[in-house]
Length: 240
Image (cartoon, rainbow, N blue to C red; front, side, top):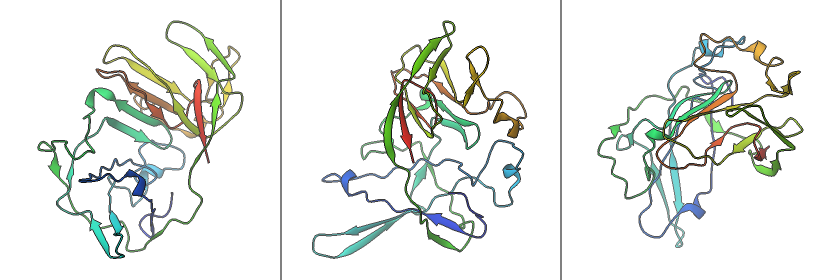
């Protein structure tokens, strides 16, 4: 969650017991910019925050064995890193995902990471690292589209019938390199198209490469099921 990152950093705890498998296990982490490294320009000038820097990561895996003994596995200089299919992400604008850059199995034991680079260690943004104390974001409801309208061969409108906070689920197929855009709005204009006028006034774009509240998904070689942070699609999960 958002905080004054040069004064306080929050950490979250997960129970990963259900994800463990007999034998060897691998840990994979995908970092996003979040509030810490705000990309898009807006009226609040978060992109000029004094703490802003590339995303960083620190990890402890605490293991309790059946005999009661404990062990802690920590992230360190022996970890490796690589770029991901998420080529851009921003709180205000959305996520750009290029499926052509996917590395199948990257978070599995058998993956060959010989081409990956060593991580670069650095200090935490602050020395005050505390547990994040708030209700978790959870999937509470699946919402189908109340109506679907096709404007032309490339433009569809999925109206949920209400304003929500959620994650879209779409299933798509097509030639590699095909670009899909999911524009998220709270209103419709007179022609019935998605209208961002009531909220885009806070955004100050430098050019048209980072459209407001628009996820961009570029298809890869195989059919994928992308999940984006918010949209108006036929199958929709809401989160709290």
